[in-house]
View 1: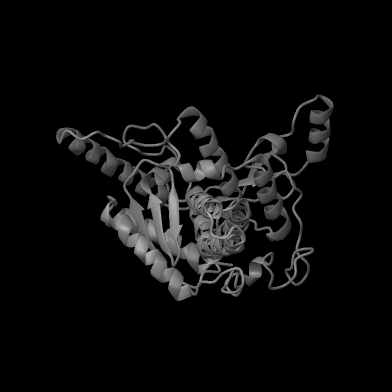
View 2: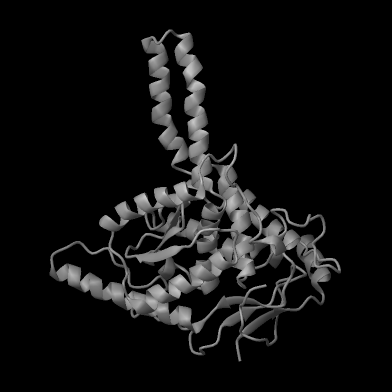
Amino acid sequence: MPTVSGQDSSGDQDDQATNEKNGKKSLAQTDPNVNPFPQAQPDKNGMMPGVKQGTIDDVSAVGTRNIGARGMGNWYSTESEIKMGKQYADEIEKSTRFINDPVVTEYVNRIGQNIVKNSDCKVPFTIKVIDTDEINAMALPGGFFYVNSGLILAADEEAELAGVMAHETAHVCAHHAAREMTRANYAQIGMVPLIMMTGYSWTGYGIYEATQLMIPITFLEFSREFEAQADYLGVQYMYRAGYDPQAFVTFFEKIENLEKTKPGAVARVFENHPQTPDRIQHTEEEIASILPPKDQYLVTTSEFNDVKARLARIENKRRITDKQKGKPSLRRVSSNGSPDGTDSTSGSDQPTLHRRDDSGSGSSGSGSGSGSGGNN
């Protein structure tokens, strides 16, 4: 039987009142695994309060929505995005070392394809694992997706890995790269009258040149608006794929703390959009308000632990080989500190499930359920 964690709501209000009276924070305020927002309930038609059918808020409409499609805010066709993504992907593959182990690559690809199947994306995805300790994942326009081995080793649960992959998938589904480039094009066009007003003088040219220099800095990174939207959509996609959406919050909090203790371990992409308290709060509010509650969520599987241990052995072997060749070693054995990369929680080959805390309590109980994390 799968391991299931449950929550008991009895006495929650009394406990919380006692904690507040004594000046203590409740578990819901301190435990990242507990959502502090009250869980909304769907109506008889399965719709959550305030959610309009078919909108970006309607998780049941995932797969039928065209978010950020071609128009005034996106000048690029799907074919153009695929061509552009393929061009960058070819450059990446020329200078990047990949994990080619079939067990690892098949597993990561399976997780990613399940998320894509439960997303708004309209393009096929190619998913590969990059051999690097840096904690990162990257999805290029057109569905060219790269997951760093360091990300897999840093995750403690399959749901955490799925959460990051869902966030990056959302960038592709919502055409964020194409929309950023469209904004850059608008910015360039907007500079033309300024040049004409100065009579093509050096002053005007200097302003245009400066703008050209600023545009790559501004548009190489996604705006806060697009990062927030990727959070919003990514949580929906991992939920649809069967995963505990709260794992999204816990992992980003974890890597934020990791960067404080081990600077450089986390890719710059995460530094550019850290999980600030506001973003964490918005994600938790989303989980409670637009996602219909489930009795159980897929948290992790023994396969995740096995693949993580296998990947750690591969990287450890690579470290030894590089040392023998006189190359600098950049390999980390395991994120959990065990020398062989194994996880003490593995044992059963059944997935671990988590029962949602509808009351916002931290009290624990037990239950049982099936191990399926299928689609809604």
